[in-house]
Image (tube, rainbow, N blue to C red):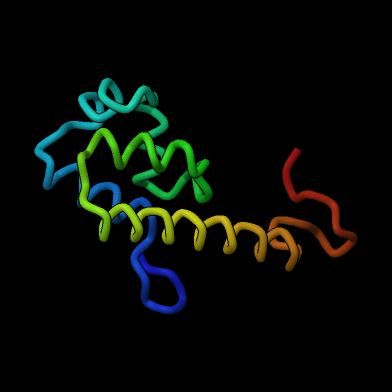
Length: 102
């Protein structure tokens, strides 16, 4: 997945880094202290704005060098920015500003 400016999403970067490290989602979960479900949600883009602490834990567990660590952090910040824009634009709301679900 890519964002509107062509940058890779956090989930795509995370999946690529995990695969380069030769780890399964479960192995990365054990190393990072996050759940395998959380890692799966991040990789699939279901979670758009991970906590920066989670990004640091994942980068440490993957033993990535500084350039990739910076890319992961930037992608996480970009995901958070896109999520705020979606809320601000009224995405997921009816014409009166009420949520479409629930």
